[in-house]
Structure formats: C-alpha cells, structure tokens
Amino acid sequence: MKRAFSRFVGVDLGGGRGKTTAIAELRSGPAGAEVIEVATRSSRQPWTDDTLVHRLSDGESTSRVIAIDAPLTQTACGRCERPVCPGMEACADPTVVWLRTTGRSLMRKVSAATVGGTTRPQQPAQARLAPYSHRATEVVMTYERGLLPLSALGSTTGAVAARASQLRRRLRGAGFQLHENLLEVSPAATIAALCGSKAARGYKRDADPWRTRAVILEQLSDLSFASQSRMAREDVLGNDHCFDAVISAYTAYLWARDGWTAPEGWVADDGWIFAPPHS
Image (cartoon, rainbow, N blue to C red; front, side, top):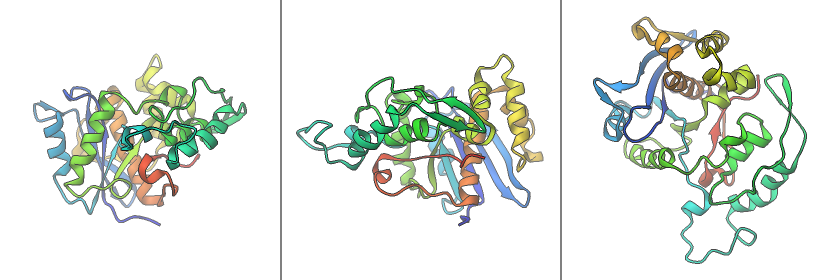
C-alpha cells in the first residue's frame, strides 16, 4: 500500500565532527522523485549533532520520511538489561534465538546467490555470530538476500553507530518513529538490488567512480534533479557522501511508493535495513 509522504530526506551519516556527513532531500512528483537539495554543510557549518538535528527536525514529520544509512538499533546484548547473562545458547531473547538457529544455518550454506541477475558463490561463515556484535538484519541482507558484503557484519558498533543511536532518540522528540517515518537503509544494498552487485561494489572503488555513479543514476529512470537543485547532480557524481545521501532518500521514496514492510517478530527490537526487492 502506498504511503502518503511527499518529502524524503536521506542522510549519509559520518562522525560527530560532521565533515563526512551529507544530506539530500527529494520530493515526489508525477514522474517520480526529484532531488531538490544536496548538502555537505549547513551554510558554513558542518553537520554536527545540533545542526543536523535542527535541519532534520525542521518541517512536518507527517509528510516527511528520514532515511539514515547507519545502524539505528543496538545489538541484543547492547540493549539487554538483565543483571546476569545466561549465555547465547540459553538466551531467550527472540533475536538471539534467531541468530543461533536460522542465522547459523544461513551462514553455513555454501550455495549460489543471485544478485541483480548474476550468480556468485555464497561464502561460508568467516566468524561465529555473536549477539553483542551482530544484528539479525545484517545476516539476512548478507547471507539470505546477498545484498551486502561480509564486511557489513558487525557494523553496529563504533562511533557512527553510537551517533546514529543518539540521533534516533533525538528525532523521536520531533515526531519521527522507527519504521514509521524513520528508516535504516543501505545505499549499497539498494544499488545491489536495483543495478547489480558489480555496481554496488564499484560506485566507490572503481577507477572512475564518477562514471559508475552516472550509469547508476541513468538506470534509476524515475529519479531526476529539480532545476532548483542547481549543481546537485555534479555534487552527487563527484562526492560519494552526497551520492549515498541521495540513494538513501530514494530508498525511502521507494519504500513509501511500493509499501514495503518489515517482517514481524525480532525486527521490532533488533531493527531492519530496508532495501528494494531484486529487480
């Protein structure tokens, strides 16, 4: 079911100094989504915590969706309040149960995974799943859907993840609720689903990433740049943070247009990375 949102803000979240953070805003129109703003700074200020929250909180939460490409939830152990840990094998937390059953089964599989029309061998587990460093959604995106590389596992810890967690709590005060109008996304997963795993690997690492990004934008036929966005297209092609912010916002647009939903169960606490179905 299509959701009634008209503005979509994407955030490529960097560290607390804000120098590697970028935002992009899209609006929906008859022909699809239009980029109306891309920015790596607020006027002359980088996107520090306060400037970023002020920008994201400016406007009606009922008409806007914010999509952030960083973990918005903690691991099962990170959010656990039990005074004594029973250990992974005895833990009754739904996420931990999933990790030690379905998650382990997915990681043990050595099969072919189809991503964007190409087939690649699925790699066996490189490390044991641990509820203090892994979330179930990352395992699903890596081993079940094949949209993220193995390096995505365990990305829930670190400075950016901590900043994302605080940002989620601050945005709650402005009316943004997780899975309602606040989404966790992955630009790499979106590109892998829509354009193939080669494009997802290359838009930052190719010898000419500008060209790879241009090809990706050409494939997204319902994404355009409004005249008021000025040099936004050049910024997006030349800066991977701007590009990720636009893809994050575009993912939110697709989520609203196509009515994606998250699975039930452990997702409520453990979180979910929204990405398109395979094209």
